[in-house]
Image (cartoon, rainbow, N blue to C red; front, side, top):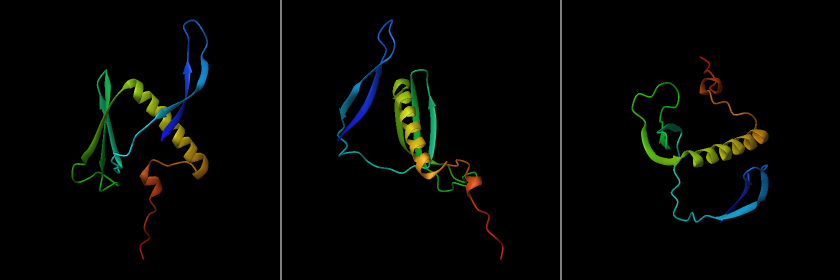
Length: 114
């Protein structure tokens, strides 16, 4: 399936112009889907390293080390495009379902002692 992306170009000495959406073909039939609730970003001046893993104890400090299952290495240009795409996706989600609280302590309800 293809995805449509708007492209903005800024010619030398000119103002930014909106270019027609570009259809990019993506073949994802061999993609492996994995779940992660942990992410760590490190890198160098040339690239970012994004590690994903599963934290079996999402509240508090984990007792055991979190096992990194996937590692994606991208350049900063791709990282900036990813940042924009993620920001747009989260904004759309929050517009429909409400603001996402990232502090788990604010989402957990205390258990009543009975």
